[in-house]
Image (cartoon, rainbow over all chains, first blue to last red; front, top):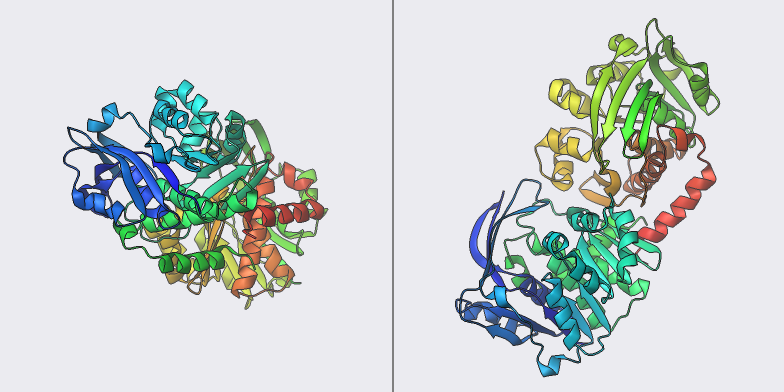
Length: 302
Length: 302
């Protein structure tokens, strides 16, 4: 088992979905990722919060297998995002983004994290992702996420970052946008030409497409009849995926990647069952094991 | 092995997709269905064509395992549909529908078909679907398809028809429309309450959801990087599905339904690779077997 280093956002979100509205609840890619990945392996988190960040929210991480010495508290307010989902839950409409202390985020990797073997670059500015890459010495595996905002505003930096990572995890819509392709299959084939050795296209309620070394592995999502809030599903997909790889000290062999993707989609299926991190906070390994065997049943031809 | 009776449309389509445009090519649910289902079991087709219907197009059926004595040629022109697909290929925009001889279609089941064990009611007016049901004596299995047009214009008849069939095959968008649900999972649970013992929600490039007796079976589609024309994909899904069941004299046990769905999605994956029925006309059983083993590889965790 190896530790995971994650760099991403921590924040407070206000979220409306057809299931209701919640104000200023805990969010941010690094929070979603850390809570789930720490079920698999120890997690070290690097990020920034404001003076208003609650101790109890920090304890959600510290009470788990998460080290927060790379978390800086700066003068000012914590990052805030406000979004709304329509009925099909497939895409968030951003209503408000207050960067606050995240505006001047300048990730400094603590000395003892610099030899991390598993590095996850959550969805932040690709220039910051590269700053992190510059500070970590010879990681065994680097995975990154990104989003449409960086595709439209920092495509050159994004392409440079892509060329330095092993695995790209990306939403289907963003995969199409980044490649100009019309479906996840052709987009995957283009994305590996940009550098990553493996690409995971996250399809929300439809599951994922894994593409690596000319091979596909494609699976549906675990069926959830009542989706409450899709926020964080992508981050927790990444957490299940990368958590498994760090736990087994895995590399990029296809069998490991397949298993990691299946665990990612299962973790995401819990996330959407509650607002914010609420379902994840009470998630047990037994819950996961039970859903894993149901998933095998639901998707297995034999 | 049992014969299949199918009642549906035969027509000429004009189709635009990002891959090009084809005018007045062979189409119609009964054509798509019969060409593929006849690879599994003998097919008897009931429908109507106009005076302009080409002998060579009839031969596409008669040269296969398809009996056309239930096909009437009427004075007037053959059914004509014109549609356009945008880049994501997910939904056709109907530009022209000329019912022509289909306007007065009054399905008469030939005496020798009335004891058919496997009956497929392709997407036609639910009142006609019931007329057919009234004429077939004690079929072992009845499956039906439908579309948004009937959901909005003939919901009462559609619900009556639904209550008389064993299996409903339906598009995801139409499943949501018919139930008022927001995803395929919750929609499936509602649809079985309307009568069918099994529901198959067709998700296009994302595969399918099978729901029956409280159990789900969910799989992705076979990956196709270059989709040329999605027309007929749903009809050929039904053909692979129902063809397999007729071939093995299957019933509604879950294992048979699972296998049938997998064959359905595979058959649909060929359909989209060419305009109209072009790819299907040259499709061999070897092509199918090859894709079947690739599909097992791509979707199998072990």
